[in-house]
Length: 396
Image 1 (cartoon, one colour):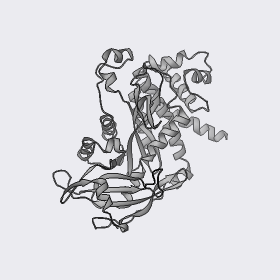
Image 2: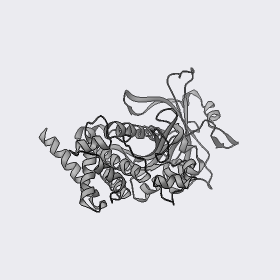
Image 3: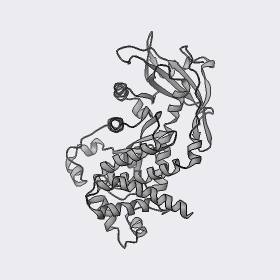
Image 4: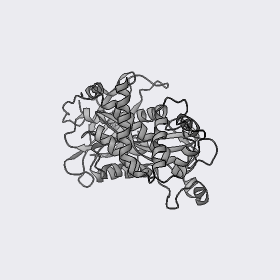
């Protein structure tokens, strides 16, 4: 047990050694370490008061100063944490996953808050939305970037923005644009990733897919059932095309391990026509469909549709694996919220949100790396099977 504790402390020392230069003075650097240790502690709530108490302080003033006024570079810490994650979790077949999560709030003062749909709550709520980029590979997964979504109700009210310390040069950006910005940072930094995946809020955006085409990175992104699909005779809808799939095109496959075992679905893959003005030489396009095995509450077998683009010769199983990788970001959200207080903050200002979220990501990445370097974790992550892709239009 003492050896385990020593290893944990040494790992945290290594990580803080990386980020030390992002703090201009010793006091905020030491306090950030106390803040992260509090996030890692088994506390019921992880706000300024509880983190201060865990650090042996009588008031939360120091912790609040760390988030609001201390001199340190949160974006620089983000970059260092990303480098730490890739050093330990990097995988040539890595997948970048973009998604959003909601932070329920009361009142109207928290930066970016408004009544909007939160996938976390499954309904419209008064909340903030954070857009995140996760990295997942054979050795583990973690969050590597974050952006706070500011609705137009905020960006068109500059006085309201100033009251929340939003810089004057921050303008409205769609969630897909925020996702592209984060992906660009990761790719420009040399993150070893061969794929991008996302749900239909991002995959249904043609500009987002075109940007991925330009970056020459493979993708498997969900699209709405009404998505227009180019075919030889013109165009059709994704759901209409899938309705034409012969029964032998459907294959029962797992797209990864879940909390209750393998995530099993029926899958069908269709090769799509490739036009030289939209597809790079040596790349192909596919429509992938995922069908549930049991009916939903409407008595229907729910089907999800994906548009895919990747180097020619990519197997069906690889496309299915990447589609299943999207759950990695949901797992990251759950563990970051329950284990390191990603959503426990009590801050209203723009910079303070980024600072708390960045330190929570540091704590989450530390846990992910610590788990990954255990021999059993490495052994469990090392196996994956692939098979040949069929040559026919519908892959059987």
